[in-house]
Length: 411
Image (cartoon, rainbow, N blue to C red; front, side, top):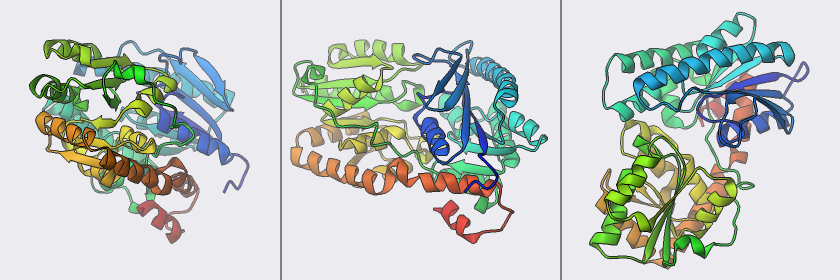
């Protein structure tokens, strides 16, 4: 694959530290295993406080962010700081280790400024499209204003600067081609498949059920568009209105809405039926998921979530867990028969679907087995490795040189 010595890759990521960001770390280790020299620039975070660290041959440079943004002004401050420190550290990597490719993971859609600058020095630029930021902005702030239109321009400029674009699913690929005007053979779908080496079966921990019969599990960010309020209202319907006091809810994850959601649980009168763990290590996460009888994805039904592939869905499936979620296009594509689908943004129907599974253990087993097989046979990260490497091979191939690679890009 590599024709003139080991190529060097610099990965830029802003929203999570490495190696905590699972997709980025899988990409980095895959490229390393394929013979690339890999460096990463990312923010610091809990458990990732060191400004420089080398892990398994991958060099990681980190910087501090001034705040965890919530409002529009906060995002402007956060992203400006991230852009400044990333550009500064990119020069440090340039002189210390060098790079041939900048692999930029959004958000934000600003790294094209750095990628475009280094293209002037002969470097390649890969745009790894993790989030559709115009839709994310609309989901957070419920408006299409001048900032929304600016985000569309930044997205378009990111695609325009890219030599190759990586999409996380076919919905994102369509955006790259239609909205970003990328040539189809330069857009590669690389899904965020779970690693079965990480998502391991461990014995259930019955203490997590707090003395109750069932545990409903959730893993993910505690943010506005994640719909945790819908899940809590579903929990209230189960516990208060239907008087099903045999169900406990374990919610794993941190984010800007964590304290607000704790307060909402208390307001709804269900605080003793809900455990919020915050962000925890993999060991604690796996304990909750392996103990859960049913796992949920309450992500709000909106344009962003409808088009986005959610890691939590495939992690639930990797551990053989039946799922309940709102009926979203990419969520249905991922889970298929491993999930029940509640009416969009309807917490009562979400509650009814949860109880439907809790009261049917045979169905839970059947759905869980289907999900596990789908991960093993189609969705596990090892199935995505050839697609990622094909995207990199296309970087050094003359335009239009290979129709075979175009077939990989389209899948």
